[in-house]
Length: 143
Image 1: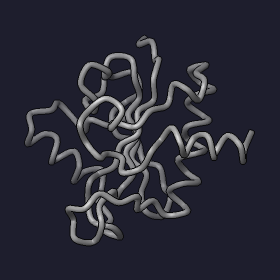
Image 2: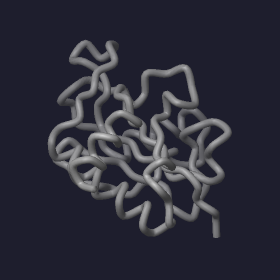
Image 3: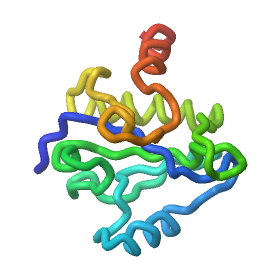
Image 4: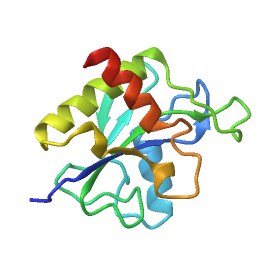
């Protein structure tokens, strides 16, 4: 069993409002020679949470952090032009992300400080929002 120390939030880097399936992301990742989809969970525009890689399997989503992390990807992250980084989370995605983070933190006995954005570890815009600032607001609301 892996020891989980972090949860890392990602976006699919796709245009606002465009739905993408787990299978499509899996194809993208396999084209890059990944064994499977790199993320453990994908959150769709309507807030549906779909499993990607099994939690017990090491992900392929954040260099030097895969061994001990769970990767969550929300669909979106770019403006309609498909290039400009933008927080495109729908209210349903945001609610699902909050619920999933709380479930994973409880399952792995992690504090909210163990939740990060991919951009904290790489020179990327992903997930196109400041996870740490957002978590401060979420914890103030949800205690």
